[in-house]
Amino acid sequence: MAKKKKKSPDNMAARNRKARHNYFIEENLEAGIMLQGTEIKSLRQGRASIEEAYAAESGGELFLINAYIPEYQAGSRDQHETRRPRKLLLHKRELAKLFNAVNREGMTIVPLSIYFNSRGMAKVDLGVAKGKRQHEKRQTMKERDWQRDKARIMRDR
Image 1 (cartoon, rainbow, N blue to C red):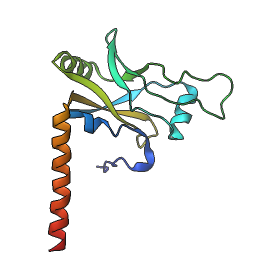
Image 2 (image 1 turned 180 degrees about the vertical axis):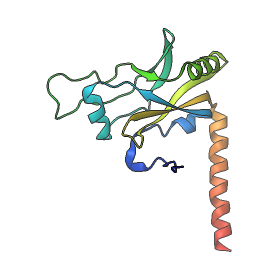
Image 3 (image 1 turned 60 degrees about the vertical axis):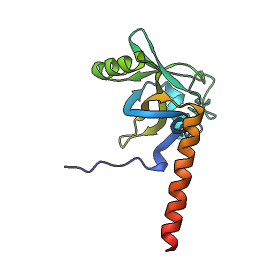
Image 4 (image 1 turned 60 degrees about the horizontal axis):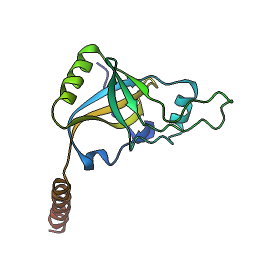
C-alpha cells in the first residue's frame, strides 16, 4: 500500500491564515475546483488570495465566492476574471452534508487553503466553521501564549 503524502509548503497555492483565528473549524473537507486556462498557471505562481473568500450554494451546487486569482502575466489577451465564482467539485453525499451544516445556526463554509495534490490537481481544503466572538478570540490567544510559556519553562529546566 502506498504511503499518503502530506501537504508540503511547496505545493501550497494560497492559505487563509485568519480562518482559524476567526472561526472554530468543526470539520475539514477536500474539494476539487473548476478552473479556466490561465487560472491554473497563475495559481502555480502562488499569488492567489482566499482571505475574504467563502463557499456558498447556488442551484444545488457549491461555489467559491470572492477568491482572488490574479491574471497570468505571460498569458494572451484572453484572461480570466480575477474574482469570478468558481465551482467546487464534491460528491452528492458530501454536498448534502455541507448544506445541512450550513442550514444550522451560525455555520459557514470557509476555504482554508488551495493546494496541488500529488497528481498536480488543484484542490481546496474547506472547513465547516462557526464564527468566534471577540472574547473567544482573546481566550484562544491567552491559551496559545500560556502553552508557549509553559513549553519555554519546561525547556529551561
